Image (cartoon, rainbow, N blue to C red; front, top):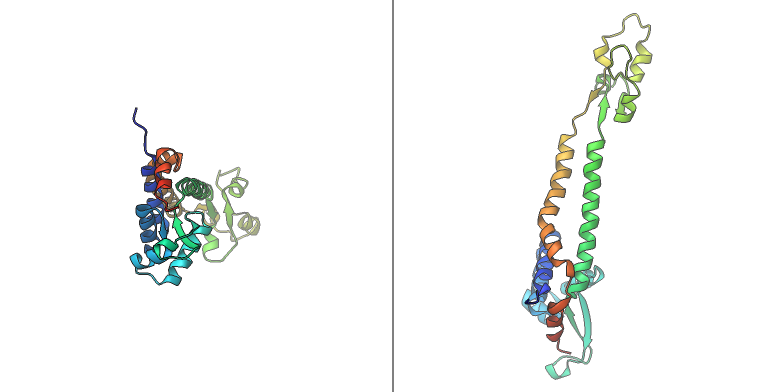
Length: 223
């Protein structure tokens, strides 16, 4: 059976991540490194039409995020210096870092969705016109069920209107569920977008830059 070149899947995952989370300059830089594998920063500056200082800042930032690496190479024979920086993407490291970050992002979004689902609020009608402070969580509201009517009643209003000669109808201090569908829909949409965009690439690129693809990348370095 023919060996699968995992480099293709790793490159797809790295390129997708760049487009999802970074600006155009980073996307172009990543694309150049994915295509040419091993480059001097001055070569990249010319290709990307970026000021050298801006390019170095971007490369340093990506290196701190473990998405690119550099090696010092004796490049005197090609018109460089004895310690010329050559930049490249370590596919294995980049894929593992991306997989971890996507996992953490998915966990955060799942928590947001769960929080939106469980963060039901109950408000007393009097809260809206500042007649009382009747704002309760779902757990609090369940402790305030009126045994006679089965309604969730505002604790503050119950105390205020008990034995009151001019107490308003009980409907005026019955708790009302606040609609949080907008927040819930936003949390669900964010999680769905991440899952759709990355799920297939995460599965395909799970092996990182190992195997045949990693060996091909190593052979293209001018070392």
